[in-house]
Length: 346
Image (tube, rainbow, N blue to C red; front, side, top):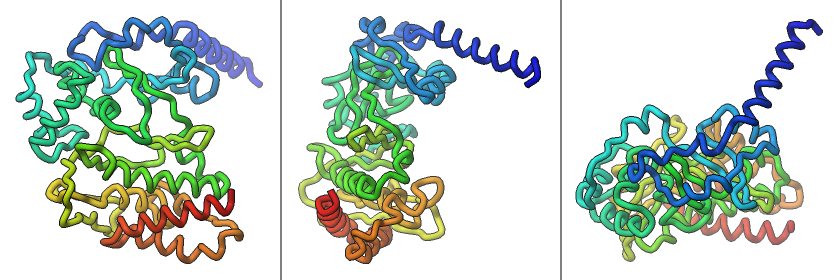
């Protein structure tokens, strides 16, 4: 090996080591613009948050600020720090007096990742958010990334939000991305598929006030922990519709075989109930025809001989789920079948 190459390697390692020594959590947090920030409840705890370098992924993300995501430890718990928004976006945030009416107007007409169907939905949302945030914080967050707002009001398979300081939120670490489990044992993938379908139903039905439709479902935005518990970890792109007890018409997201994944926000909003979440999970993650770069051949590829007697029913239902106007019924059948399969092979 040439001396120049050796020197390059040594200097690179020294640079990484210096980066580890000098990178401080305090450098990430900037509460100077508060109350026009995401929150300040965790600013007092900065000294208790330490960046971690236990894995190559930790090292890579923490040193090179990949996606402005950092891995850390907070009071013995593994957490994720997210600096939501690029510096250029944060510099453009408009700081002025905010009242509820102007905030509602902004939320309804905003072109951000949060699509609120109607004014009364926005009013209801602000009322709920006021239990967790000041008006200035809601205003600021809604200009950049709605994820902290969704984490504050939703239940289900989402990370716990520990708090914020400046433009950084601290949330629960929920594991590796779903695509890391693409070749896991089939019974593990069947358990994950079951959770995906249950989550699609829960986001649609479970909240007291809203129907929540996820518009950026992908393996990168879903995490799986060591117990194979599944969590949706990116909630930036969401359609929020009012929840009505009586639903006469169900909107069916239309399947176009020549397009990877398209849908109409206007059509989802114009109906009291949509099967969009089920369609997204089946089309992008479970179908054998899932488009690249989603889940190649579907999450349930390569079934073992032990479940051969269920193969036809299972895979016919999965493809019907992609192109059908009875997706809620199909999802229920798939959930029951996957529960039976998980019981039989566990």
